[in-house]
Length: 339
Image (tube, rainbow, N blue to C red):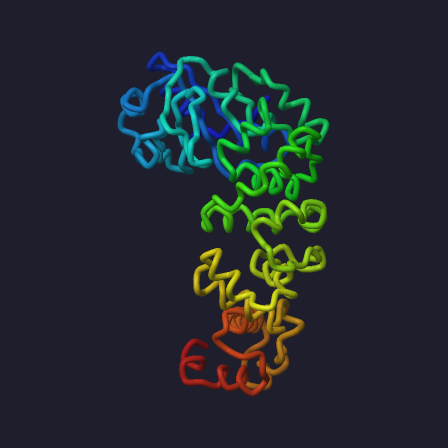
């Protein structure tokens, strides 16, 4: 049985007390069944958005996404996205449905989702609703589209990248027909916004199986990166910017790729600092704890804190990784004032 946090159960209870059906759905169900702690909780319901707001009463809400049937309950311990059951609709831009059709049927909502492992609904008392075999696919460690994979990827091209992200994070195999559709529709990745690509790639690169996926699906990812990217990222700590640097180490103009993907300026500096050979760990910093002791710092946790601050400044391009510059920063009036 799923372990649903009290604040989420409170949301379910309010909807049910008002006469509506309500279930936890999607990634929180998947992660719970895998023994992972869900990063967030989503609820689907038979209630229309205005009925959801009424059922929640005095509980604060946000209406970002209300046009697509989503109300976010600000339940205290965390936000809970509550979305009305929806039916399939056409996607003409490979991104969003042209229109939203609400439903009173939970299975309609599950049938519109991307992968079977994300198409399960759970309830602390009613158990699991899994009409598409998502739990079996979890046991098989298999990524399989809901319904026709060609249709699913054509509807929303980001699902191609999401598929590879889940494979990189979970270590799952992509089912044969789903994999075939990845290759056939890979060019659709060019229609995905830079912001969405960056978000998914950050998660993919942080995955324990990132290197394997980068190598296996190089032809698919090549639609996003015509440059000669490097797949050898496993030896780099799973910190996104460090892995981006590893990915781009053979690219002649990495700054152009970072700009194309609309990396924030601070992150661009960090990635380029990694590429320039600036330290990825404290062991590569050009000063050590003993240097701080010689400058008069007292032994203790503060020495480590200061070294981490210097490391961050080097990675962000604020300081060069040079002994004289780092010692100069420590001897500055501001550094002395900070302790």
